Image 1 (cartoon, helix red, strand yellow):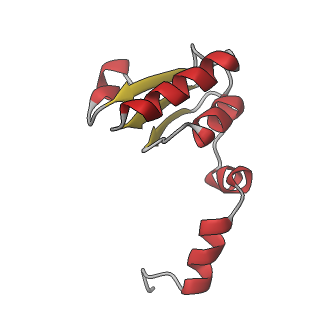
Image 2 (cartoon, helix red, strand yellow):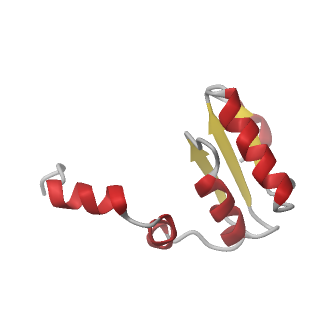
Image 3 (cartoon, one colour):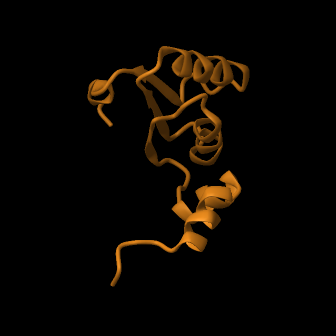
Amino acid sequence: MNAEISKVEYEILLFMPPAKMLAEADINLGFKVLNYGCGPGKFTIMIAEIIGQSGIVCALDIHPLAIEAVEQKAHKKDYSNSIGKEEGLFPCAKRNL
């Protein structure tokens, strides 16, 4: 099997709606998810909605402004208890994920 993807497959992934992409990831209620390179948190919040209060999503990004954006969105949606926000390279280990 060829590990490379075609240009068409790449474009499909690039422009796939985030909700569809997450549906294909088969994330469910209660999951623990690492959102590595979370950016401003678009996927983080969608993942928090899927996993519910019994799950945890750890949003990890090297840029502090990205983490700040996630914190604001999590607070606005009342997901502060479900989302662990970390800045740096290896911080999620301390959350026992």
